[in-house]
Amino acid sequence: MSFYTSLNGLKNAQTDLGVISNNIANAETNGFKKSTVAFSDIVAGSAFTNPKLLIGIGSTVEAVNQNFKQGPVEQTGNALDLVVNGDGFFTTRSAVTGDTLYTRNGAFEIDDNGYLMRGGNRLQVFPTDATGVVSGTTPQSAQVPATNAAGAQFAGVTVGKNGVITASYADGTNTAIGMVALATFIAPGGLRQEGSANWSATGLSGVATYGQPDEGYYGSILSGALERSNVDLSEEMVGLITAQRNFQANAKAIDTATQISQTIINLRT
Image 1 (cartoon, rainbow, N blue to C red):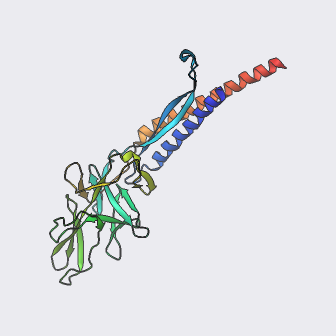
Image 2 (cartoon, rainbow, N blue to C red):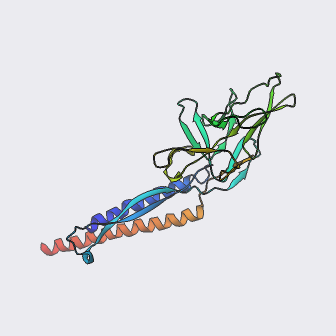
Image 3 (cartoon, rainbow, N blue to C red):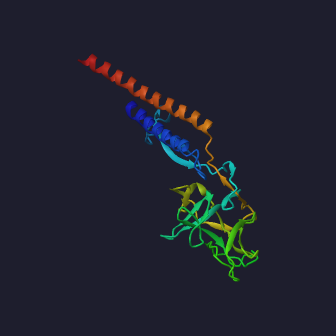
């Protein structure tokens, strides 16, 4: 039995090493959230087993938990680099599949059709009138018109603390094109990682609840900056050493069990 108990320990240590390695590999990934492994013990016995004689048979991975603590903020000076300063996710929608994704990486840019994009996904905003007053609660793709009603060319864009995106034009006029729609979840730990610092909703996370930036518990929007990974390399290196020692200890237990078995076999022969 000691073989399988230690083998479980080896597998768990390997999982821990894999999660820590992924954290370290993404220490420079904007909007990345680190993960930690939670373990639980395994005990086997029947109703007729004396509880004072129960022996554990190892451990198993209970969950790989995501940590959504906010990462450090790096100033970039780019007006379309956005940070959610508090709770909430940017909502994006794939231009190809229409799938809705959520992210903390606000490195957006304008494509040739005027849409605010990141990695092929369009930023979702609440519709507003020209002054920035919200006129609807259904998020839609943010699009900057190339010209305004007077025919003046697009000159630039700014994003306010309240999430209102304002386009400026060559004739000196400004027009609001929408307000950033922030999403929150009752159980964000249940979100599914999709890569590229994107998440999708699942039955465990619950559906998204949308709100306006800088209202209630929704964070404000900081323009000209990006949220970096929340991975602490010093902490991860300590965890890496601990996981390595755990792996080595279980490997040593298997080696010891092998030596004992070999000794018994030699006695019998």
